[in-house]
Amino acid sequence: MKKLLNFIMAFMALVPIMSGQEIDKTLTGKVTFVTSQNIYVRFTDTEPIAIGDSLQLKASSASCLVVTSKSTTSCVCEIINGCAVEKGDAVTYNVIPKKKIEAPKIVKEELTLGTTDLAEEEPFYKEDIRGRISASSQSIIASNRDDRHRFMGRLSLNADHLRNSKFSFNTYLNYRQILDSGESSSLRQNSLFRVYNLAAHYEVLPSLSVILGRNINPKISSLGAIDGLQAEKYFGKKYIGAIVGFRPDIFDFGFNSNLLQYGGYVGVATDSDDLYSQTTLGFIQQQNSGEIDRRYAYFQHNSTILKNLNVFSSLEVDLFSNLNNEVSNDIRLTNLYVSARYRFNRKLNLSLSYDSRKRILYYETFQTDIERLLDNNMARQGARARINFKPYKGIMAGASYSKRFQNNSENKSDNINGFVTFSRLSNIGGRLSLSYNRNDSNYLLSNIGSARYYRDFLRGRLNTNVYYRYVHYDYVNMLNTFDQHYMGADVSYNITRKLLFSISGEYTMYNQENNIRIFTRLIQRF
Image (cartoon, rainbow, N blue to C red):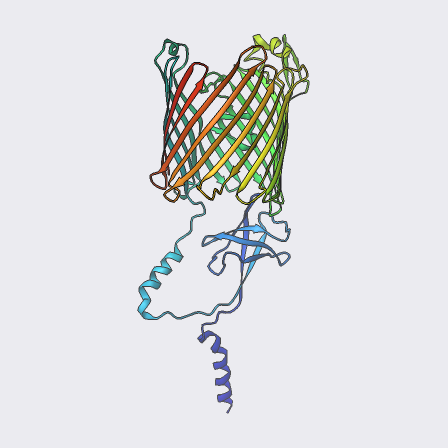
């Protein structure tokens, strides 16, 4: 009897194993990297973890992370419940027992293939290549002057994580060739090649990146293109960056080794469901042939609150001057720009902006003209308000008012603009847009009205539009007024999903002159 009882107890202990039931266990991992948006956790094996599962901090046993993506040994997570997570923290995951299902022998080959796929390491970095190349031409055939023809080519490319590596590359190139039949062509540069962006990126760590080449840093957007080396390091939500390189040549936008510039910046970034925010403060020194050309501080802030309010602001404060060999470190506000956009609902949004800008003074580059520039360096200010709304289904309307002014009453301007678009025309289909603009400045009063009709065919592959625009110019110092009439049409066809061809024509009439403009464009995306 005793042997029988022992046998029954042993059999009951084996039942979970025989039925394919796993014993509960806990996986332990470690936080390896922390960025402003993601937390990276490494495990010995992530096979039991599914995307969407939560992870706990071992020190508090609280659910602090949710898995957004994973490889066989790492998980990319986002913070939840307001937890504070740092590099090196221990993280745990409670494995939920799952019933093991025996596969029939007839699908042995499929199971072998599936096992191989699961064993392959998913890349931590994933290649993403996007680009566009275009060729276009523009011809102006005039009745009272020489014809003019222009050809343009553009290439833009963003290649992120080439071959799933830490290397990325981006570029934006522009070429223009002007063909004139008149003698005036000798007075201008008819062939023009511009490199606006050409840089290689390397992510030393997910929180540390290095850029070499010509690149525009979005955290220092007012600085423009930088020829040289840039580095940026994140410490959780905070970051620091440094640049050393050269400014492009002020005349031909080429490389100029005399225009050395260097500086650094610090900032903080927040990215959550209710708030996205990025704030940067930096200092830049620019030189010309070894002498200080400009030294200034800049501030930039961009935030989106509750997905309805967007705020952007930037300012520059000059910290150096050199007038008649007298060096000063007086503070001078050079540029200030503030804008806000609020989305009340799907039908109504309002935006406001204000800017105050002075001419930027480069004391070495323009040393012979500094006094003249200082005499005429009033702050040019502007304010703008714009509202867009949808009063009814299928109708979009908007209006804006902007004002330019400065202390000496020069360069003042008042501009009023309004438009209405009917997107559902029941009888003829398509979309109709009407607009009006009035500008009143020191020397000119202009009124412009236009109407444009859009229509697509072949399920959106063929797009067409025709328009008419009337312009009336009334110059303050002239007795005569000028009226201009523009009539045009545009046709674009999507040959394939990524290949587009378009052609447009415009006929212009004013005074005794009639002009024809023809524009063609071919765009290949990849």
